[in-house]
Image (cartoon, rainbow, N blue to C red; front, side):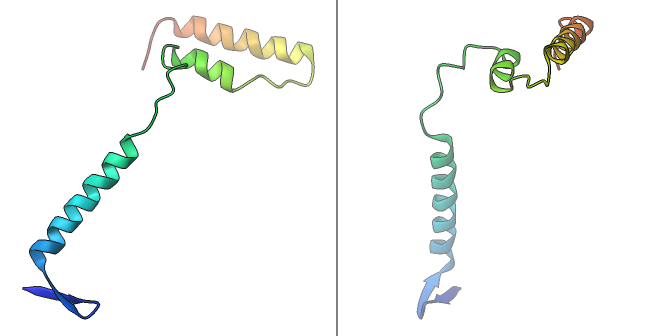
Length: 81
């Protein structure tokens, strides 16, 4: 069996191979690239703290937020999901 594409008859096996190679190429391209080696050694919690600063309206609010986060981490203990 074949399909007519742009006026030409294309066999189904060529369409299948083209689809497989295109999918494989897209996966290869998406997984490639340079990895950020500077932050790969740090735990996720430290990277989040660096990326999301606490923007409080006053120093009391900032201290409250910092204490709240510290208490929540203490309650959680060493449990990881």
